[in-house]
Image (cartoon, rainbow, N blue to C red; front, side):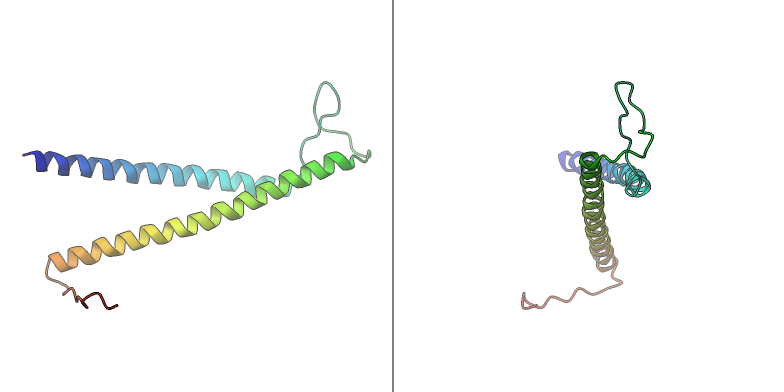
Length: 119
């Protein structure tokens, strides 16, 4: 009876992990879209104690350099996130393929070939 409960618990945990993965992917998608929108924008610069955007016309090389660093950081993190998402998709596809193959073997629709660990 303990094995049944362990199995049910495992299924619930797997279901929760999949739900969490979907939620995180949706949040990442929204964040990537936001980053895509802002990566080429000029940042807001405080114009004084009240804040707001500068009226332009005044050269502020230090602020421009800081904005360039921030823009580069956004671009860098976007590239990293996109690479990690590509890897995550590959892992999920691999897990799906392995489980699907195991089920086909279980159902007798596919014969598992064992090569003795040679390949």
